[in-house]
Image (cartoon, rainbow, N blue to C red; front, side):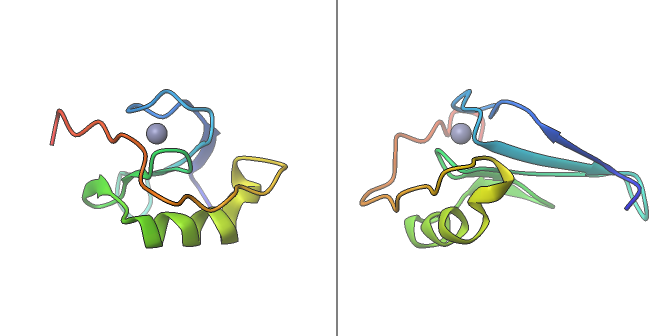
Length: 83
Ligand SMILES: [Zn+2]
């Protein structure tokens, strides 16, 4: 792994429950996932569905939190201003 893994704040909701990864091999890429509001950056960006967000929260919470993240019953307010 040649990239940088960092804990940054979510650019949309400012939560610390945001995991991002940058790499420059084989291409300059940046990916990120917010475990709070569901915002993600991948080859494209958007918001995960409630189902996907809960799956990520359940399976990968260790990336952003020591404690388990409870499943959400509904999506939080999602900042879609720049979409
Ligand atoms: Zn967020």
